[in-house]
Length: 186
Image (cartoon, rainbow, N blue to C red; front, side, top):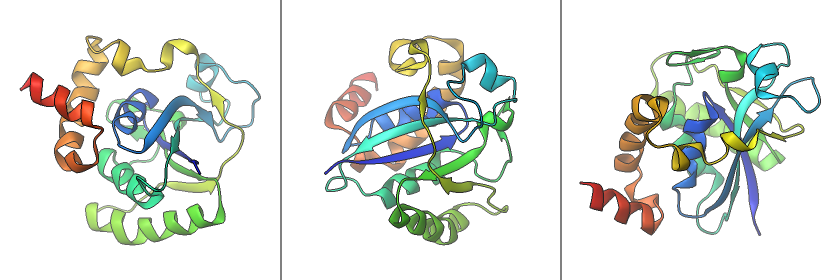
């Protein structure tokens, strides 16, 4: 049975690109969660007035990859110590967040924060752990952004370095085609 995970970790283009590469992840959709406005647009979310975070909603097969493993990827691929910021991206929409879909996910997120994140980061963790609320998919041009726009300046400057680090750290969790593509590039 498939499960859903929803993470905010800065720009959803980065989060989507990383989680799409994991074996056991079946679908990743960029969108918005955690705000107070129905049907938010990208412009409204970026204005900081809706309260939404940019998130990636992940459909995964827990018999292949566990929620705890997804959390380890999350902690490793963004900075959970900077409030409302990832790199040069600033604003409440870029906050670090885990939106849990069950009590079990909440418990695993709490344990992971205490055990994994604290081992990886020296500064205090500011990641919000909150119940999932309504998910609003982002506009179509945000979906599969890295896959379809690898030459875009943001992709080259921000996402590529994250992907390189991620692929090295989690090589044993990558989908076969992603490993083959990486090897053919090198």
